[in-house]
Amino acid sequence: MNKRELLELLQKEAQGDCTPEETARLDAWYASFDNKAVPVFRDEAEEELVRTRLRNRIYSQITADIPDLPAPAQKRKTMVFLRMAAAVLVLVGLAYAADIFRQEKTVPQQEVLLSSAAPAGKMLKVILTDGSEVWLNAGSSLSYPSGFKGRYRDVYLKGEAFFNVATQPEQPFVVHTDTISTVVLGTSFNIKAYPELGNIRINVATGKVGIVMGGNTLATLLPDQQLTYNKPDHTYHTETKEAGFTHAWREGSINLDGVSFDELAAVLEHNFGYRLQTKRADIRKVRFSMNIITSSKIEDVMRIVCGITQARYRIQEQVISIY
Image (cartoon, rainbow, N blue to C red):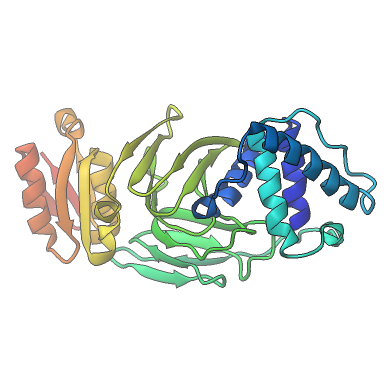
């Protein structure tokens, strides 16, 4: 976000008018300064004095250039003020306060998106114009603009991908799936969101990400934390899950940990090109925990599957039936 947008959001937060999406944007912006925090005040009395002086000074300098800027709220929580003070200190190092809002407003133009897709049994690495790297798993696709010119770096994922996002605190990176969005500044994480599956999983390797749905922030994830969103009933849960275990598919090793029959079927279809099916209700209820090496023969994989289900299988063309 640019300087004007940042201060406008800070004012809305101070007045309690921020939408959940705007709050998520502020949280993401401040996350980039997590490792730079230092004590500011000696005690509450000094804090109150500095707060009053700084507030008056900020508004005396910037309201002269912006007559339509609303007056500051007089009653604010300490954390809200600290956010505004931190933001102003950052911005002052970039430009004079009086120049913060002297930026022309442009009308966003609809842009044609590019698309990259990994075919069945193959992975694909995509490098975006901001330097971000994306590894697409088999049967996955990513849509993205030729250049990131708006407030956000928006991309659209179908399937599974590992993202290593270039750090740009002023322009959050947003991954959209069919239900939820993942908002980051600069970090690495894995998203599994195949359309045919009933859930979406986000696992963080480094940094911090925010998960947003319909303007509401569902959770903020740190390294080795995972969120699973259940699409049919719109519920979700978070848990600790080692990131290296989750994105090992980039090295050709797929780790399944208690997944459903449908998720196993999706893995076989996207990585081996076979459609898995069964008429047995008891097999469809089985949870599968196994490691699949993508360079293996399909017969070797099915021996493991049938060892778990105590069943047999047959292959006809590209369809595998378990019975």
